Length: 218
Image 1 (cartoon, rainbow, N blue to C red):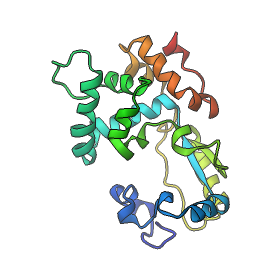
Image 2: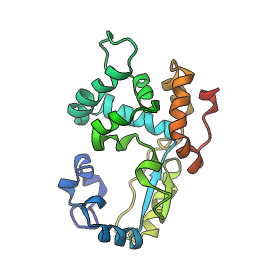
Image 3: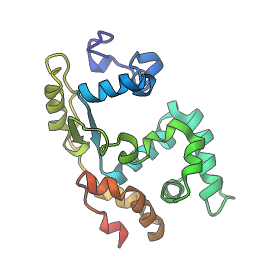
Image 4: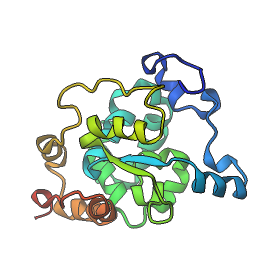
C-alpha cells in the first residue's frame, strides 16, 4: 500500500484496510485468469511467514474469538456457536467458545464439513501446507515469526523495496516462543485431543523446523 502511494508510512494504515481486499486495492491471486496466475507465480517475489503451529492457533483463537470486537459479528456469533454445538460435551454451559472446543474442532478428522460452512474465515487456522502450498509454489523466502526482527529487513531487501518501506519496530520479546503460554492454554485438554490436533498440524511442525511439542503429547 505504501509502494502504491496510498499511505506514506505503515503506522498510517488502518487494520481493517490491511485485511479488506475490496478496500485496499490489492487483488487476490484467485481473481486473475489461470494464465495471469501462472505468470505471477513464475515472475513475482513470493514469501510468507510461519509461526510455531500451536502458538499460531492460540493467537487466532484470542484474536478472533476473545479480544477483537471487529470480528465479533461473524466469528463470535456464527462460527463459535457452530463449534460449540458440535464439540462441547456439556452443552448446558452458557459461556462462549473455549480453547478446548476449538482444539476438538481442529483435531477432528471429520472437520471438513464445518470448514465449508465457515468459508474463507478458516484461513486463520488451516495448516500452512493447505493455505500456502509450499510444495507446489517455489517461494523466494519463507520467514519465521520467531526471527522476524532479522527476517523482515532481509525480505524487504531481497524484494528490492527496502529503500521505500521499513518494517516497524518490534516490541522486545513479542516474537519469542512462549512455552509457558502454550502449556497454560493446553492445560486441562485431554492427551487424545492434543494428539489429534498435532496429527493435523504435524506437517507444519516438520516442514518448517518446529520441534514436536512432546511436553504436551507425552
